Image (cartoon, rainbow, N blue to C red; front, side, top):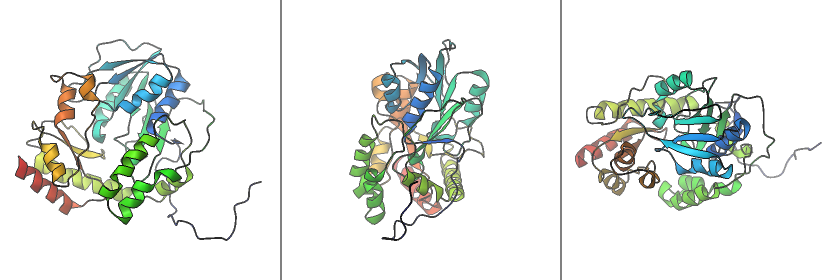
Length: 318
């Protein structure tokens, strides 16, 4: 029997608490959660949206599964002009965490569906839909994912170790986020082509000590404030509900230069996703989203004063 040592130096102190998804399978990355589903379900073909992150192709190519792309309408709903047979599945992303109504509708109609909740951490899984989450999109962890799968089969896994993935997080606290960005990029590279593993102990400990209600409240308050300010100029159709907890506020403006101008003013905006430029034509809706969508930060680090600053800068640039 392995005995934990008593004594020695005092280790990193992390608050005890409950995991948000204690009953889901805790894994190391979202892409590996998708691989877990594909290994268990053994689908031959997967239908993906053009508007998605290219890292999802990693497990698909590894398993040599055929894949096809589909388009979205202006409500971010799939345009399904193809047949999803018994050996095929459709992956749909809960975009920005505000498309739960579409998720609910799709899961009632499509048997073999996979929901990508990487942008919708707080949206609970639906029983008949395989669903995966990415923790680092919402919290200060280097990795981590959750999986809900409609099967009793399980893969035998080793536990991951995350100790070499923390430098960007530590620099973010001890110096600032900008100084940690290069390390963040390197950390992203380190997550490529990793085996499926259980979530590391330190990632799980950090997540167990997270104040989830605070995160939810901050995101909702910040989202509502920005929506009140921008709903009349936002070209993106929202239809979000009071239960939705968004990852960002997605502001769609017909101005490709706005993103760069905001970054120059130290309001950092991610691009979802650069690979879409190669996958689509400039006339497509997905190309327009990648080019013009301003993903405004609304997470628990920020309050309404920060939102006021964002609004002031954005409106000065329009």
